Image 1 (cartoon, helix red, strand yellow):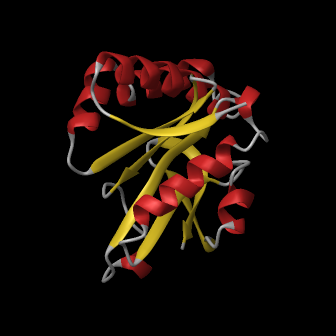
Image 2: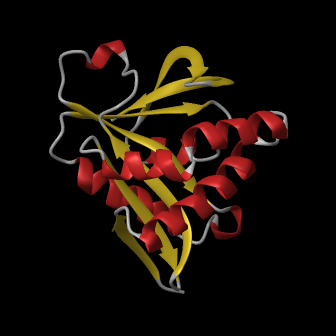
Image 3: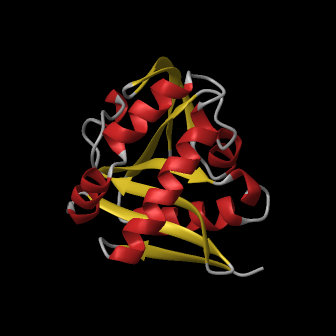
Length: 168
């Protein structure tokens, strides 16, 4: 098994891989906590073709895709967008957002490789934050890499799920 992490741009290939991954991972990640119709609405509003092209072309974002034997297995968005924790107000900080791996690739080293590459991209910043729902199985992975879970519980962006900030 060969794991490769690649930066993605708005090419036909990059967009197709991201569309497949964002849709499948959002359904896997949220459908056990929310009604499927709500998850589909979330996907349509956040991961449509036009939205992804705009996000891929934004200077505020970098997108990485993890490939296992040349098959897209996961992705992450590194961005300056999003509501940051107040403790980072005066710091140069970046966000790891939408971190996801297809379930069939869990525990094969894909999540480790994707997070390590993400952290290497984030090194020039004073701090890195993640905003994730509290039942996300990757929280343990984030904590093992030095992220500290904050005590404040809030809502995950536009989803009605309890979420927490993690800061490194």
